[in-house]
Image 1 (cartoon, rainbow, N blue to C red):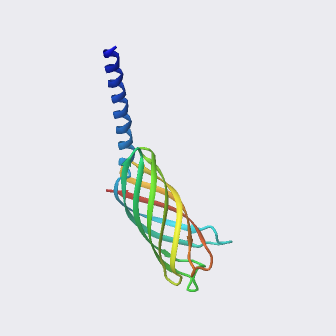
Image 2 (cartoon, rainbow, N blue to C red):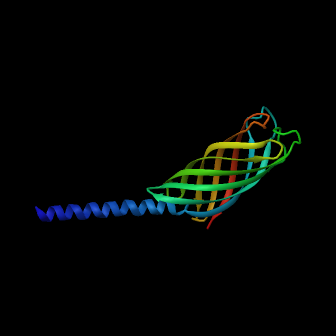
Image 3 (cartoon, rainbow, N blue to C red):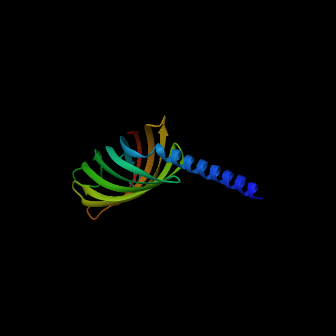
Amino acid sequence: MGSTIKKFAMAASVAVASLAGGAAQAQSAFDGFYLGAFIQNDFAKAAGLDGAVGAWAGYNYGFGNGFILGAEAEVQYDWATSQVPAGSAFTGLVNARAGYAAASDFMIYAKGGAGFMSGAGFIYDFGAGAEYALGGKYLVRGEVVRVMGAGLARPRTDFKLGVGYSF
């Protein structure tokens, strides 16, 4: 009887260690510093292009079992925006991110934060996205973000596509 319990305990320990090791591996592609660039379009606009280009940099920390928290800063230039009278604007945002690495190379996340847009003032945003790690260091991502603020002509619904590199 004691031998059976020892075998069961050993098998359970190996299973738990395997699961913990898999979770650590699942978050490793997304842990640490990263940076990248993106293009976007505001699909809340009735017609035409309302595009921007930008860059982001951030840091993610994995808590185990695939759960990840991070902070990200982004800057962008809106070259054809209907949001401000000038028709173009610079935007800076700081966001918190909470994600889940569903696999070692795939993460889904939610984000939210605040920032400033020239010609519009204080803005805030929230959204969701997915990120895929190519070869461990290169990243591709897509996200949908809702941007609002008192100085905007209307809320934005931005779709962003980006590429990046993790360190």
